[in-house]
Image (cartoon, rainbow, N blue to C red; front, side):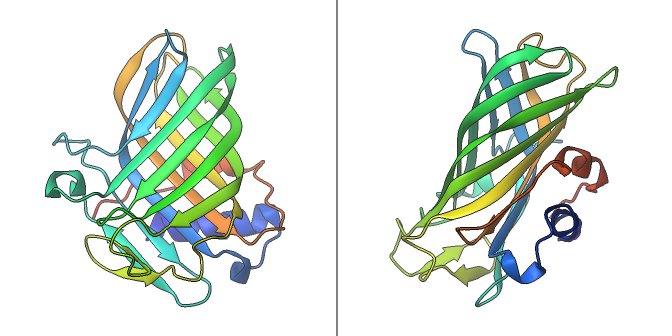
Length: 222
């Protein structure tokens, strides 16, 4: 929850948003970051590989009826539908930047989803290879695919999403990882943090400061 608070608070300062404008926020640590140069595709997926890459996180509703769906570290090993999948096509690659567009899907334990089409840019800080993605979406959407219970359920906790289903929301997404080679070669198994917020549409989300925001986020484990 600490990284979520820092993320949301900084976004409000950058975007000029009141805290009441943020409907939902999400935060995941230890996603499996990978890049395939042949297809020029970056992915960040939930994993339960043990050791340092046991994904954990949460999705929280802040506006309306507050609640949090927590996903404990290693939740992928529990056999539910819960998952995180991010896929971005990478282009205009330079040693210190790149552009990207693609999709994001967060799935709860019974198959409900939060999806978005995402577009944005990467900043690569050399020589240490810290890589920051700052992206926006105008197509965040919830779908009740599971038991049609109107709830977004974590391994612990949930929130009411019944009034969110069928609507589109704007928002921002930020990714943080460290890979000294940047997009110069294939890589996989790189610990990646992903965070984001949803705001009402129409609205305005300015994310120029989200890259630097990544450095402020402490790593969190459930």
